[in-house]
Image 1 (cartoon, rainbow, N blue to C red):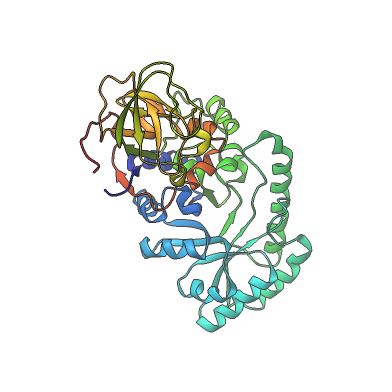
Image 2 (cartoon, rainbow, N blue to C red):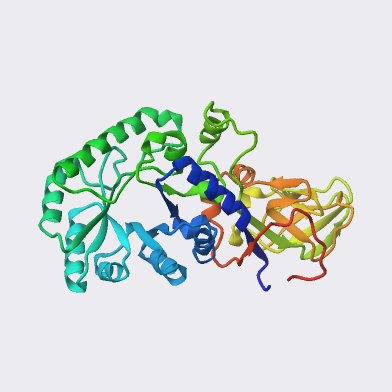
Length: 397
């Protein structure tokens, strides 16, 4: 492998996550959210793994991600665009049976025109404003929306009516979420009174489904949870300590691991500065390992003299400044280490573990940010069971 690092995706961890989440939502449709290049896991690698788990409904952010999903999905699998698609791409979406959110009149009219040109209905999800104040039709617009839909029965298929919650992962937003849900039910009733009954009423993301079960409805848009992460510490504690769950162990399993190899070993004497500047001075003779990646690859400069990696089953601290394409770690205490040995930046090795959460805390990121900052060019490989041991190698694979 020519790349200086690689990402492993654990098929078994994903299967366990989806099985658990499906149990939580019962008969509701499972929608796998793969925006942000599948939260850094890679759409082309991740989507087929989710299909293996029986999921056939995916949500992306824009037309570009939809195109990537279409390239690898099974014929019967559906793709839904939640945000950006230019009107001149709507014909492509209609032709390929891709559904998309409609949150303003311009896109709704564009959907009608595209459907008329293609000769088949546009599959839309009407997004309604309930308090997020981002995208969505206001209450005062819904009569006109309903009329336009009813006047174009051959051009419009209402696949869904939806909204988005303004922070269901935080108890501080409790009142806001409850109010949003109440407003959504009123919007649904308005459409129902006019004979518009969508296939799916969907409002819940991972946080809402796991904290506010009443929001599950016909479909849940699972993002961060399917990858093995709780939306927040509050969500995790609520679920692990709830009388309704009483888990003995965390039911979510991290799917992603990030690994590299030792590029070189460097002995450095006592009283020497390491790397650029004077941020690290050796207080004793040390043995350092050079790791061939840096902030260009997503390993942030904020981890300088703060981060850790795993080598030889031991936790090794970053010393000196993280450079654009390499950084150094202290391996003085590692019994055996040599060029080519496995380096774990995120994941398990022996009895040690560096979680995305701990990595994020060190780099001042939240899980979402860190995952989506992993460059798409880093190779992704699928493993059935990630090796929970450290390896020694004399070369890069």
